[in-house]
Length: 444
Ligand code: NDP
Ligand code: 2IT
Image (cartoon, rainbow, N blue to C red; front, side, top):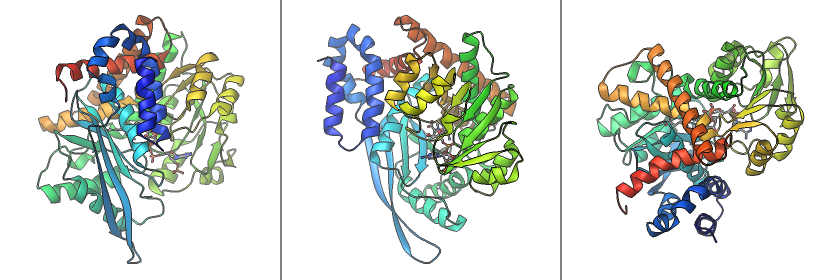
């Protein structure tokens, strides 16, 4: 059996009930086969893959807080400190009822390669809680965040581990978390990114993941002598990543006709009016259904199935495994040409294979959504230097980082005679820097 298959089987055996983690590991190890085979003896002797798939540390803790009725609630809290070979652990915090250790391990594992691709000195980590911010008052969210950070603050620091936002964690939550970190430790330091502009945040961090995704898409279409302009686009989700992907895609002349949330999807043949979406989602914290009540000509469909809307470009920006092979078949049959993942692992393995075997150009999340964490690293740089760059400076750096990632991914795919296979390209290019640093640092 090949070394990569052996390690995959070991991961499945030793990490039961963590299917998303198995899925993320399988995709990476399958891509790495060609690299490992060239140097198998050396990698085996150093147990490189066994070390790569084992988190350096997982912190798991109790988060008690009091709700508005005076009832004591208890949630689970975690931080997965996966790999610090190339820099301090870096990655978001997710607050969603579906969060468990396996989900955070898959996200932390992906983050290692994504962060490496940015070219910036950040290791891989992820954390979060099964807390559901939906329907909670601001006071309840603050009480939860303060309790969560009281425990987490023992394990993080500006040069140790720097969390940020993810699903369910945006500006409001980062503010409450930062306040509590400062109160517990007495340190005013860049320990979180995605901070507000008045207390050390970076311009363009809010927009960065969505903008970066569309900068990447732009490189993909250019490489095919094509443009975003004039294309019909579907963006799934309606959160932070989705909203700013829609904004940039529209600026570049694309027409976004569909978005969704976990209840259902909207279709607007005239092109999404983003001001209405922002008001519903960013101001009122409402449901996407309200869009159809407010915008003439738009319709709402309850449930899944956004992939049934015909599009040239599909940008999944909601959550893991949101697109399965049946959805992928519909997209291909309707002539979809490009898919770039704004979310982390939104496409099942079977769907990814179908897409790539049926002529759709596909960019995996660890390359396509890296603009968010890259801009987080730019926020860390600004915090260390105690200065702030202009929006134009940050946006220009973000744009260049996405161009560089495309080139790294493209050239790695060509080096291994798999031109256009950006899954293999991203995994190999991300792995090379991390493995080099791991070998240099000895058995740790
Ligand atoms: P948000 O919480 O802002 O938005 C999440 C969106 O996805 C919401 O519209 C939510 O709908 C929807 N969603 C969640 N679960 C489901 C589901 N099961 N089915 C359909 N829709 C669902 O999170 P972000 O925009 O920050 O994150 C979106 C994705 O992007 C995640 O995969 C995240 O890991 C990834 N990502 C985020 C980055 C960032 O900087 N924020 C960076 C890189 C990747 P609802 O409100 O109904 O739950
Ligand atoms: O998945 C991701 O890359 C993020 N949620 C952003 C992480 C970060 O540290 O900015």
